[in-house]
Length: 402
Image 1 (cartoon, rainbow, N blue to C red):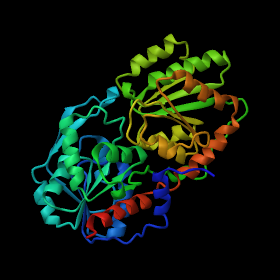
Image 2: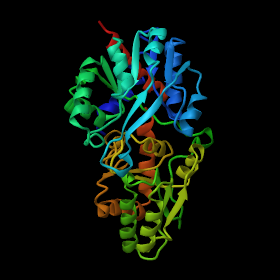
Image 3: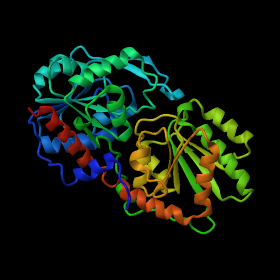
Image 4: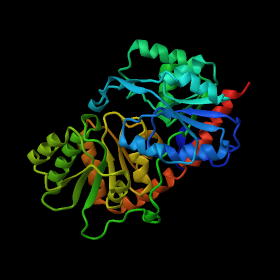
């Protein structure tokens, strides 16, 4: 019998045990920015709460995806003036957390106009702090892990602990986020609900396309999707590919496709050329969100060699498409989505030989691709917008409970 993680048990329980009726009539979600993947969850909350559910966001969004998200969804939105103030941008280098402030002088007035019975706020932010200081029952959504937060300064940690004592409940994306809240910040475990982050399901054109099956003579296609920055560990993937190439010789039995762009691309192209594997590695460049699904559909095994990540949605997206997943131990979703030897493996990105061995196992035994892909589809099935909305409402119940 397969052992399930706490977050998976919560997500599975959401489908039946968690009621869908809202515990409040007026609920505000403070989200300065949000990507399109959050829209289905906000729509689900709107259906469950009604028009009393409102998302408060910044009028000016920093990225194209954020601006697109503001045009999507049927849920009510309230935009306010404000801007991002970046204090550091070291996240891309790996091992460090990024720091920013979202300044919005009109936030307090916007909250008072909405008169919420409860507030959901993202992370330990100024917006969360504002809600707490105004006295609203506040649910804090948290994504960080012990890996991503290892460089947080004592002053910031002290503020987080102060905020955690005053938050009424928490929603997390997985096991490692729970671990950080309990062990580092001091949040009470019985006030934490898992399951608040889910991927977008695949487009309808891919219905029934999973899992993958390797055709005779076809090379195993390994896929990475993400920015080409040092923190994603792509250099380690290329070192593993070079080791695998040495083991297999000249036979075209595998390829590696890198979907994404970034400042490390030129260095990675040089690395592949110097290692003699340029013929095996395809740099596909940036792909719009809709086009990324075509890359999943054309691949066999997904690889995320990150040096730190919260709960990268590329992993469950790949699982939706029926791919086995090789996931770094520094990825926040690893303990929630990967069942060792069932739908993939967890590996140390700083040990390319280990990754090469795992890649070789799919080349040597192609039937594992279909077997593990089928399990990926099963394991990711509970991660739906409706279950994520139920997780938020369960936390709201905890927040408003006398």
